[in-house]
Length: 118
Image (cartoon, rainbow, N blue to C red):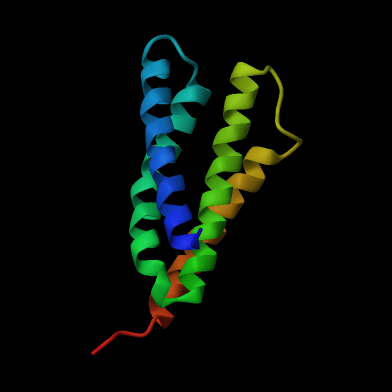
């Protein structure tokens, strides 16, 4: 499966998970569930857009991959704390948060270096 298609599917699943987790949070879920839902929902449209644009730039591909992995790590750790009673591993959420910052910065570089057609 091409990365662009994988990214689109992963983004759609992030959106679906974000909606489901928002519903769970509104029915007595914790702040961790609400935060995880928000991060998934905030990043899903960006990842869908990148799945459509990233073919023009290797840097955008890398930024999208970093962003996807990081939001999954961050949200996954928050959800593991809430539903499993333990972290994924020490510093998983901070690592995911730092990764999201790195992903966004990589996208900024990609935006500056992508070639325009025409």
